[in-house]
Each structure stands twice: as C-alpha cells, then as structure tokens.
Image 1 (cartoon, rainbow, N blue to C red):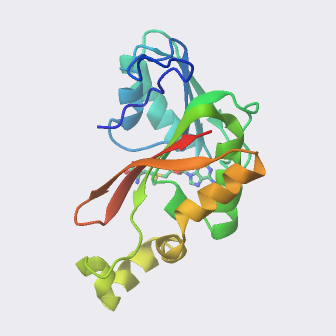
Image 2 (cartoon, rainbow, N blue to C red):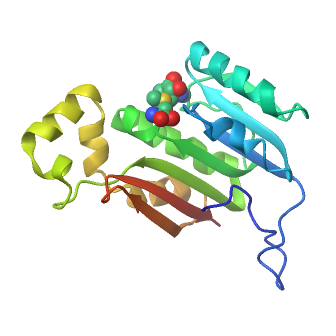
Length: 199
Ligand SMILES: C[S@@+](CC[C@H](N)C(=O)[O-])C[C@H]1O[C@@H](n2cnc3c(N)ncnc32)[C@H](O)[C@@H]1O
C-alpha cells in the first residue's frame, strides 16, 4: 500500500526515515474511511482538506471528529482550481476521485495548483478511473461507455487524456519535474492509484 508520508529528502542513508513534520493536502473529500484514515498517520501534523461542497465537508468533519483528537485537520470550502495555500507548502497532495469530475480546463487549473503547493521532494497521489483500454468490458462496449459517460459527464475526456503529460506540463509551469513512482491498476485496469514524486 502507498504511504501518505514522504521520506526525508535530505537523508542519503535511509529512505524509510520519514520527515517528522508532514503536511498532507486532500483536494476534495472522499466517501468511506479514506479521510479519517489520514488521521491514523501520527507523523502528520497538519491535514488540509479542500472541497467545493459544504455538505461534503460537513460529512468529513463528522468522521474526522471521531478519530482526530489532535485537531490536525483544516477544512476549507474552496474550489480546487484556487487553493489558499502558499507555494511549496505541502508534502503530499491527494486527489481522490476528483479529476474525472472536472472539465478539461478545470483539470488543468487544478493540476497547476497541485504542482504549485507541493514541495520538491514531495508527492502527488491520484486515485481515479484508469485510461480507456481494449480489455475491460466497460471500456470495450459502447453501451457501457455510454452509461458511464452519461452518469459522469467529464469522464469521456478524462478517460482519453494523457494524465502523465498533463502533470508534467503543470509541473513545468512551476519549474518542477514529475515522475511516476508507482501505479496500481485495480479491477482489471478500471481504476488506478498512481504515486508521483515531485522535484
Ligand atoms: C464524488 S466525490 C469523490 C468521492 C469518491 N467517488 C469516493 O468514492 O470517495 C468528489 C468530490 O469532489 C468534490 N469536487 C467536485 N468538484 C470540485 C472542485 N472544483 N473543487 C473542489 N472539490 C470538488 C465534490 O464536492 C466531492 O466531494
């Protein structure tokens, strides 16, 4: 499983040594236990959570209150395209099933913001739909594609975009580089969890 914590970039001897002060930024809320799970990482001293919907933040708050006694969460009602954090202020940025919900231009603006706030030596974690392939039934058959694209109006574009190229371009805007470190394809390549390092 991919850890949310970034190793200390200055340490030559050990990559398992983790920076003692970690800041994680979640760009959009997630259903299930993903948000409260962030609070189980004790090295994390601050978790920023941005979402455009008040109701999603309210739900996240209820879950967080049960697990986070240290008050490490900051919740922001905010569009992902305009994140109120300073440059290079977060170790890990997490995008959990957000990108497929955004029109192409909003996706670009969001990725630009992610690259702006994530520091060198940090990471970007993306969980979302995997690109279209010739293998998965839901990809191969027009009817299935039609149903998914009807339910998720921006998915058609996201399925066909070159996410790696887009991340690279956004990183360049901020004088940074991005490298795919790890990718897990789930359910016969229908979903992906991708970890990028930023330098
Ligand atoms: C559908 S949820 C993701 C949940 C995911 N499907 C899961 O299973 O956990 C997507 C989240 O993105 C948020 N969102 C959508 N557009 C956004 C934007 N432009 N800026 C910030 N948050 C956004 C929604 O409010 C929602 O909380």
